[in-house]
Each structure stands twice: as structure tokens, then as C-alpha cells.
Image (cartoon, rainbow over all chains, first blue to last red; front, side, top):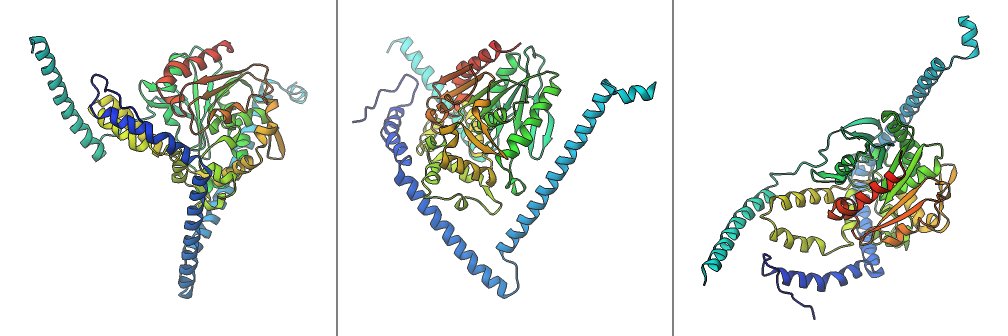
Length: 123
Length: 357
């Protein structure tokens, strides 16, 4: 049986009651959410929700396309293409940035250590 | 009743009346959302950016220690938990200890980042950020401190880039054996749930899913914390801390689908824990190639990354100087609680100082 302790001085009268309930309820609740049953239940609910959502989207897409109107799927595809293009642009600009940085570092290294050719030219 | 007892009773009544007033005031403020605490307020400046990633350097006139320390944050959640409020700041304490502190933060992923992979962070962003920290700090080397998934990125980066001048590597609450991580991760491991069921239209694992994935591991916390809030609602300091922490807990960031896919593969193969290596880019990265001193900080009461998930690092690291530090704290308390200020941070500082110039 859960023990309800006396409240410490300054603590409210209801605190031991709440702490007692916490001690009784929390350990089995924590154990349950770590069980395979919980994981399987959440998975099943998630998959069901996804399935229902996709079915609703397919229906609405078919109806919208009947009237030559764009559906969420079309917009999603377009957004994905835009995002991919932006990611590619970002990739290219990062490579350019790296090349510029490398060229700058090479220039600095040359200034610090002139090559044999540079010395011959200046002579 | 004696005069003293009467006086005590009056004081007690007066105190309770005052507390009731403060309780009402703070309760109204909380309900109305009119006073949000300022978080992450330590002065800093951005010294490097790439994509959404940014490296900031914290301002300090107390820098006495070299090399600089780069904190590598997790891909999900916000880094300001390490600089929550004045007096409750991991960063502040490191600065007070004379450290030159940088923070590598990954920002908030969006559709453009959905295709980001571990290689994006480990091979593209991190090496450049660490080089920049060395340059800005005018140092020759850098110390790295990775937290949670940031720790995993740090391990892979240091292992995969031996050319980087990393002097010391510390990781905190870092999941190496993902099969010990609980919750939704278990469903992914058992294949009762697939990643595609979790990704949103942008190809990201939504912030909400990340938050619920963690929150379900302690289902009664939200209920019982209201009891503590009610009890201490009169205390301005407590309420401010409660708001700041509450804001951070809800403020998760989405995870790029590319990274999520690799982590699910890693979870199912468990290669990192079983063999100490994993494929990255066009090569295999081995933890054995980490030869600098390593500190592995574990939270003994961590419900998100249980100790066995982090302990799995021990057999694989190539370094001869490997220290494991166990702190009696939770995942967040390790870096942001009372134990962080009294135990975690001083021990990390001590470990780093023993190995610095």
C-alpha cells in the first residue's frame, strides 16, 4: 500500500497525497510505455491514420483533377522540386565558396613562401 | 497560546496571504502568456555560417584557457538549453572557468534540408566549422564537446577526419547503441512502424513527432509537474525557470528525412555498437580511429538515452585516454539542472584542464 508521508514544514497539506499517487502510478506507466504492446499499439494507430489520410487524399485528388484543379499532391510535388532545386543551388554555391576560400589560402601561402619561379621573376 | 506561538502563527498567515497574491499574479501572467523569459541571452556573435548551420563565439573577457571549446549541438532541439537563463547556464559556467566557448548549432531544418544526411553534418559542416573556430580563436587545436546526437556527429567527425586538430573530445548522453533507446524507436527497430509513416510532406520528421517521441517516455510528468507549479507558483524565480524550461521542451526542431533514414538503418543493423564502425560517404568510419583523449559523460537517470546506449562507446574508441563519467541526473538535467552546475560542468572543466596547455 502506498505510504502517504507527513508534509514537510512549509509544504502544503495535499503534497504527500499527490506524491503518493505519483509513486503509485508513475512506475507502472513508465513500464507500460516501454513495452512492445505500447509500441505496437502506437504503430497500428499511426499506420491507420496514415492509411486513412492517404485514402482521403486520393479521393480528393481524383475529384479535383476531374475539374482540372490542382490537388495537394500536385502542390507537394512542386514544393519538393523547388526544395530540391534550392538544395542544389545551395550545394553549388557552397562548392564555389570552398574554391574561393582555397584560392585565397593558396594566394596567402604564396605570399608567405615565394616559389622559385617567383624569385627568378623578381630577380 | 504563548505570545511567541501567536506571533509565529500571524507570520505564517501573513506569508500565506502574500503567497496567495503572488500566486494569483503569476497565474494570470502564465495563463495570459504575457511574460516570456528571455533565453539564450549570453552575448555572442556569429563567426561562421553554412546552410542553416551557424557557429557562434560567446563574448568573454575571462578567456585564459586554450584550446577553444566547440560545443556541437544535437540536430533536434534548440541549443539555448545550455544558456537558459543567467545563473542557470552551462555556457556561462564554462566562460567563468576561463574557456573560449563556441557553439555549433544546426538551425531549424526545412524542406531544403530534407535530403541532408549525416555526411552533410559530419563531412561538410563540422570540419569547416572547427577550422573556423581554430582560425577565430588563433589557436592550433580545438576541444570538442558533443551533446546527445551532437555527440554522435562529433564521434563520427573526429573518427572520419583525422586531419582535424582536435585535442580533446567529450560527449554527453550520446547514443551509440540505438537499440537501447526506448519509445517510438523500438517500433522502428521491430519494423512495426516504418520511417515513411512518420515523414511529413516536406520529407522531415516533424518537430511534433520528435517531441511526442520523447514525451511518451514519461507519460505522467506533465500531470504531476502542475502540482509542483501550483505549490510554487508564488515564487517568481521558480516560475521563470519553469516557463523557460517549458518553452524549450516544446521547442523541438524537425529532423531531416535523410538523417532519419540513416539512423534507422544504424538502429536496425546496430553496426556502430556491434563493430564500432559505420558507412559514411564512400568509406567506413571506425571509432578506433579516434585517438585523442575522450570523455564519455553518462546520465544515470536518462530516460531518453539510457546508460547502456552510451556505454557502448567504451570498447571501440582507439584512444588510450578514455574516461567515463557517470552523473546521477536525467537527460536534460545533465546539462541544465542543479547537478549540471555542481557536478557535470566542474568535472568536465577539470578533465579538459588536465589535458590543455
